[in-house]
Amino acid sequence: MPIDAAGALGAAPRVREIAWDHKDVQLYHLGVGAGRPATDPRELRYILESRLHVLPSFATVAGGGAPGVIRALSVPGVDVDLAHVLHGGQRLLLHRALPVRGRATAASRVVAAYDKGTAAVLVLRTDVTDADGLLWTDEAEVYVRGEGGWGGERGPSGRPSPAPAGPPDHVAERALREDQALLYRLSGDGNPLHADPEFAARAGFERPVLHGLCTYGATLKAVVDTLLDGDVSRVRAYRTRFAGVVYPGETLRVRMWGPAGAGGAGAGEVRVAVSAVERDDAPVLADTVVRYG
Image (cartoon, rainbow, N blue to C red; front, top):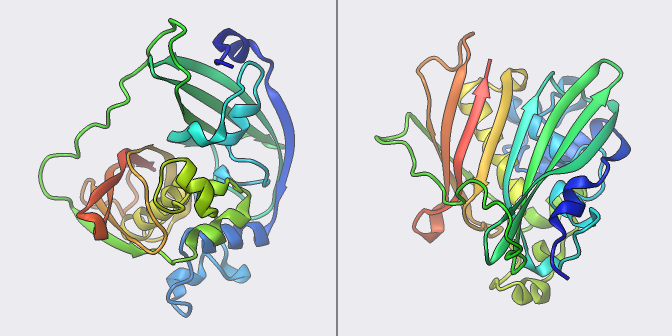
């Protein structure tokens, strides 16, 4: 059945209690490629309990359960085939640094439903609050093929903007493991698109693809390590648009444009573009910005 945009937008927020501890953080960090080389002190900041800090993109999996792109499909008025669903984009706003252990309340609701004609785009916003107040806000943009055409607002353009002009200020390459998707899915995203070859073929892919949020996390880690000297507490906001797929075992090329001295005490933002090295730098993340303070 088609999406009932009015029903989805009018639905009450869905509230759930979430909790996490150091093991969840460590597993997530391994899932986005941390810990290599295993004896590198900079990598042990992500793995070893005695010096552990939390990459802000952990917010996308904190508390386990289905990711936002899947939770949006359980909203009243939304009844679609998972094989037609793609993760279009992700935005994250940090109100405070994420603790290694926490308990919080997550309230999610659809805040936008756009009619692209041949597809629909839903935006699911989640506000997470702990005992000290608002901790983070994230928005998942969900693209559903074949579900448009109800005459609704088209919304913003879905076309990625070109990368900034001129050569990047920094370039980092991150090799992904062949089993990267199998490891990442242990943090809660069990979508068979990322593990089951038959399901991936039904969705139109030659083989299982990496979770977009895994690429999202690996990219933020590359930026934090390259420009912020590993100081995760300086990340204020992070957004991206998923422009293409990544296959496990490929290498990410992360190009960064940012003001000189990002590793100092100032505030600013870094523009980022990510591509797959082995496929002639095919774009995988676009319109990507990391704000830091």
